[in-house]
Image (cartoon, rainbow, N blue to C red; front, side, top):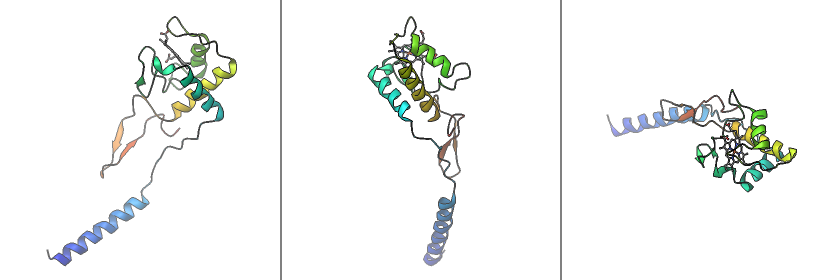
Length: 140
Ligand code: HEC
């Protein structure tokens, strides 16, 4: 192929790929920003160092369970997690939280649950190498 032919071929490939990239859907999850209550819950989560025993997205201490999706797990949910936060257990301290503090922590965990899944959802890899996660919790 002549140099000129090659040049036009590359230009054509560039043009087609550019149109594809600019028109492809982005599919970013539509996550609402955290409420003031959820932010207060995050502050409490940090202040009481819950992460010393619990994990978020698999990172943290390993004395208690991962809390990423506790708010939506089929056999758990908001009332369930509030019971633990309000009373503690033999292994988890009772922090003597007020009702407002328990609600704030619950709202933080509900917000966290909407941000993704742990363990991570199985990724789909497109033909051009982009990775898309379409787990049950993504984009709720
Ligand atoms: C000293 C370690 C420790 C700390 C600190 C701790 N937890 Fe826990 N937590 C546990 C353990 C252990 C469990 C599992 C229940 C059990 O085995 O008694 C648990 C269970 C839970 C559960 C139920 C999870 C499930 O999937 O069943 C929630 C929700 C929870 N903790 C929230 C919190 C929050 C919020 C904080 C911080 C305010 C916190 N924990 C601080 C040890 C801890």
